[in-house]
Amino acid sequence: MNAGDTVRISNPARGAVVGSVLQVTTPAALPALPSHAFDELKTRAVRAILEEWHVSQIALLSYRYIGPHRTRDVCFFALRISGAWYDLKHQPLSIEAVP
Image (cartoon, rainbow, N blue to C red; front, side, top):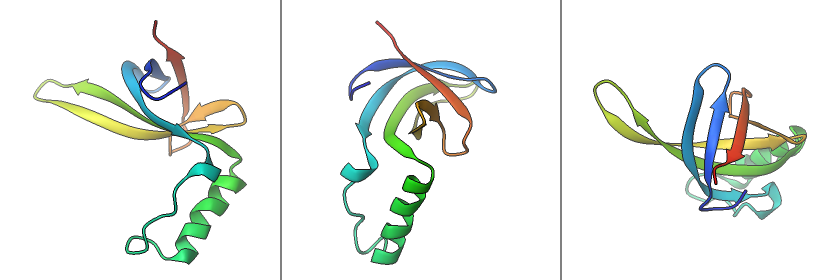
């Protein structure tokens, strides 16, 4: 999975959508968090949680939500843990390339 790919994102509770991969990275490649947003202690805490959860990749995904009264773009993070993808609530996700 690479930035720019079109993917089908499925969740057993919510169904499936077609979206885009905005970015994929590893915890080690994450940039340092800005000092005005997080101090060094919080930055280390974030990295420690990613390590504790055994996160190998982080993906920023987007899709277009079309509801009965409005349409909006939605972005969210997915975490790859032990070979499977999850959202931040640890709900399983299936992410498949769309040809």
